[in-house]
Image (cartoon, rainbow, N blue to C red; front, side, top):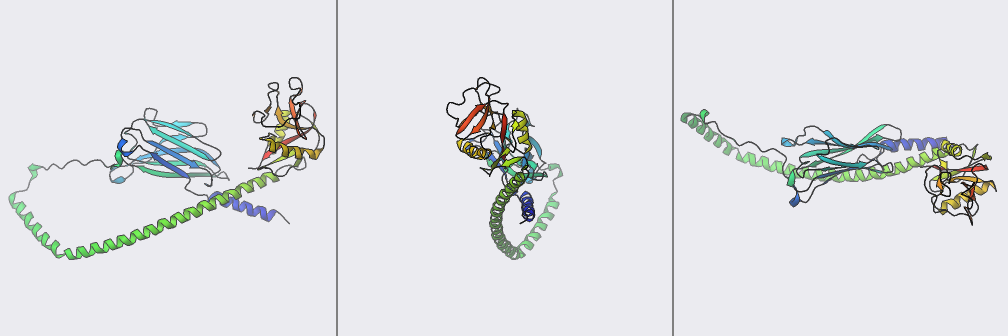
Length: 385
């Protein structure tokens, strides 16, 4: 059976996962002190972005903007106050006004926090948090969320109006006042005549308001159900996209040069088909060409899996990324520089690491230190996701 139709289907679903990701993955929180203590402790704003299920593969920055809330609740325009990138945290207002912290995580969560210096600052603003990045096809994407912060003690943000002071010099005469009183009396009679109609109109408005409230409640319930369904679908699409990515990576391995193992905890291992003179840098670069690196063991279960796979080439030497070239008998992995721990050595090994045996090969039952320039095979570890 041809794999092309299946591959095309998986690619189509991967495209769908990139465009149908949930839009609401930005969480914006206001950490304000209790009402009785407001005005004594500073306001804190925290923005968190969850990459999982958002349709975004990478995050380039998280930005926090604010807009002053004017009279009537209108906004005066958003201005950037802080941001964070993978390499830098930016404080736009300056350290005399706010303290900024945050980080961009490749794995899942990215966050940006702002703390005001003065306990009376930061109120009567609308805040907007924006996460910028790209999807699985390197197209620019953004996700955002807004939140309103009222005044201290959660009062109104509108400015108090100036008291009315009449201009006495322009006061009307007694005759003019008498005319206005007469006109007012006539208007009062007209208002009384139409009072019944006004009451009926008020009853109709109240009935319409009740129906509107019921409709709004129904719309909110439907929106919540839609959001739950969208989040569930986004997670399924993301899982499928990861499987497509792993499948494509597995297909890209050059099987003419390498023997490929079965999948173990989201990764595969390879052995070159012919013996070569071992060199740490050269062999690690060859592994990188296939999307991996010289094998590294996280625990003894992984080591046991690798030993079973290495047995396919018989008694030949199979080199790993472990070595003590830089410091005698202090074994680290060549690619990550992490220390070699939680592994099983052969009895009385390593036994010659202070002299010439500064590399490590796999044998049935444990690891063994050996010369770095011997001939044999080398094992690559290739993560699929």
